[in-house]
Length: 397
Image (cartoon, one colour):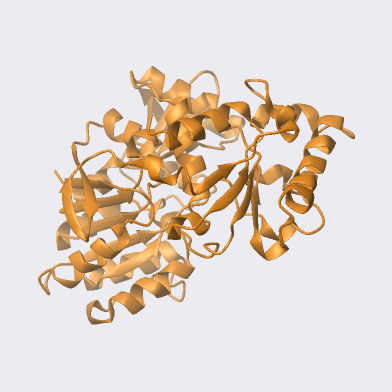
């Protein structure tokens, strides 16, 4: 079983720097896989650790996929830096190669470990009817050991072999990250903040993956302690005024709210768009280079407007430092977990905390801005629920 350390500290406190020092001062024979959310962070890691010769998986191999490129590097036993997107595709062969070389894993920000699988209903019926797959305790198994199949359902086959496809309801399937991958590493380090407000924490609970919670202080690993967040009270200026009227209901600005009112020319969304423009141009009088804003990605074009469109950043953004000069923000999201995710964990006896998950994602987004460097920012959070969560956090509650 892997030794798992979750380094849980505020953004900008030196978690990544600590991980670089950890790698730099490890024995030469120690091997590492570094997983980062963004492609542009890969070059930074290579430059920070030139003496460790990190390689990135390429597609210019015999099978032409990055997953095969990853396997080539694993067979060579070299240090590897890759993205969360590729890490999600790891399979049984990857697990064997990782364990064989005794790799260590560093994950910058929590990984996506559960998601809904898009499987054609008719295909699943055919597989069940032919007894190609069977269901055991709601987990789907591919019958037999022959993996020569190369048809359109090969991805489903691979996931079933890894025991990470879960079935409930009539035609609903969940993908979970193959727990064998985590178990095959020697040591694992997860760099994040508010791990308790992440689905990865719930995933660890589900599969009984034990971990040590730590903090970083002055470049050193310490016992975990809750950070003093009240120091940001004077740095984060939350707008209070009539522009908040569009978000006063409990579920205002949720994804369901946007879906409901994005039909025809919705006055509610037109009002929100007008409020955004008003906040940026009249309340703050910000330049476009100062602005950072977000909504659910499917509704970006509904709310975009003159002078701020290019300042959009996805509401689930983490780890990037590209926007640390922005000091005028708008967060027009009311975050709730997907119902099917909550149902999946509940069916396994694991309850998720919507408030912590919502606050976690919002803080990660806010800390892409100038506040991570200790500078003052202004922020418009029209959702009363999300504004309340942020205010409580600033009060240290």
